[in-house]
Length: 108
Image 1: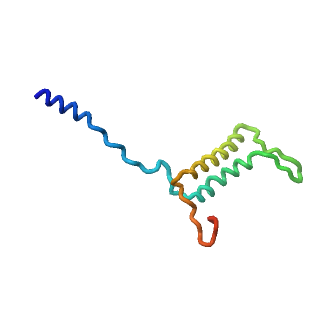
Image 2: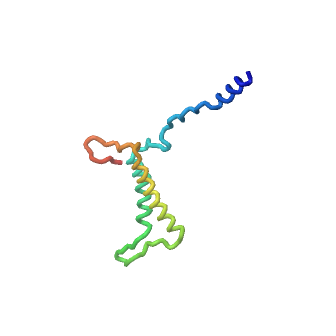
Image 3: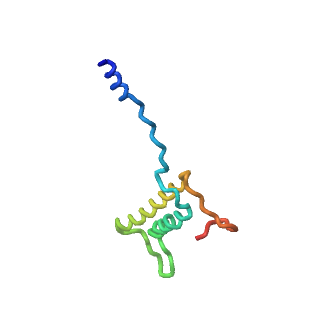
């Protein structure tokens, strides 16, 4: 009897666990790519490209290179945002932009 109880106790602890349930994607893929471009990439690209360089105009040359760590951080944040948003667009579940009839590109 003791052997039977011991066997039952030991074998019930050895059941294989159930495999984990398949979860949905760990990120939101409901936002169309053209919305990401409009609200994330374009502002970040402007933040990056307008944050450094040289402007030559009627009044001469102006150096736009950031002079402080805080100003450099703004430029770096813009560049990082563009990179991350681009990486997001490579995900296979990213919805394609909706096209309007008669146009070749989505419009705002």
